[in-house]
Length: 510
Image 1 (cartoon, rainbow, N blue to C red):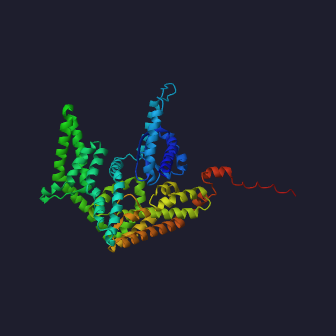
Image 2 (image 1 turned 135 degrees about the horizontal axis):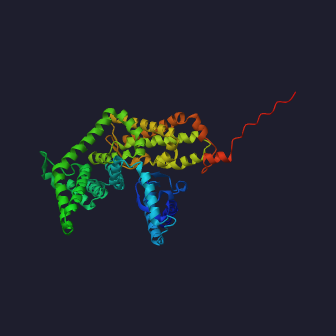
Image 3 (image 1 turned 45 degrees about the vertical axis):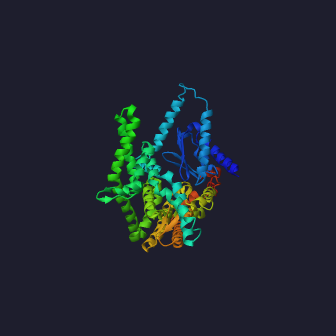
């Protein structure tokens, strides 16, 4: 069975590789929760439509990297096989011969590819978005551990409540809590790596924050506590270490660099962290937690509607990445983030809208096929196939999907105002996949019931808003055609021209 699964994943990778221009065109390979992210030398070599037509590909996204949506679980298995094929392809490729006459040498092609890549990146290359992308790159690699530890923590809590296996639950608590106790170290490591420093130095400086001995130190007239400042402090400490390290390398002689640079970097950034950053970041972290709880307790309906309704546009603009450190801070502080279940309502509105599109466009086999294949992933919180394959290209259904998300968010916000917090112990999943990670202040049963109610409200309002307001009459005429899957409306129109009006007959002569 394992061999069959491995062969299938390799087959998926082998099908994708030629459609992105082959091994020589791939400059980098990474993956996140759902997407295979590729750096490409020449974007023009990619066959977008052929990629989208592959059974295992849910969609493609153009950003600073070329992103192929494969879904959770599958992407983590396909990526190593893809990397292996790329390495094999590059090793077997013959050295290119320059062709000055035709202008198609390797350098010429690389220059063309770089120009195309720069052209694509320019759309989203604002300094603010690039900064947010760096922040996301720090936290996204931590998500699998957050999910695993979160599920184990939920299972452990259930076993404690039921009185099952009391000799095992302390071990499960240690397994679930170990990563969170040291998450600052991982954040520091990834931060230094992302900002161009030495990763292990970033981790070493961030480790100061969780070291128990800081409890003996006072700063700003207050005793420090281990973990004070959390991930925000770790992020700030590592960024500071990167700049100090770069400054040291400008003037420290090469013969002394290996001794002096790391020593000064850790010493200076460590002292600033202990006597400044830990206290400041701790205050900011506390304010985030207090502010999020106050917002939902006092303006829950409004806040829920705004967060649930605007999350899809935030994703489209890349601004949702700013929320990742906030989620992580809330999880670190109180064990769960109260924001994620509300934001997950955007996916519910998207699902409801897609079902309405399916009902409205009864004759468009192509769109209906896309919806049928993408809906299961949508229910599990993977919304890209529905967004990029259905609602966003149609326009109005994207807006009505946001209306559904706002309604679901307002529902959960209402219960926050009534004293029932619904939170998630990890970030990443949404939809039905979020149930194993739910936690709150009123017991698991009520927490799950409120979240389920929010999903149902999002589905229903997203459906109704799209069904009645998602299409103009012109849109229905344009899109509700009997088009086979894989055939564009234009091609269908050419193959089946509308009958022309009969020419008027000449009046009979009298």
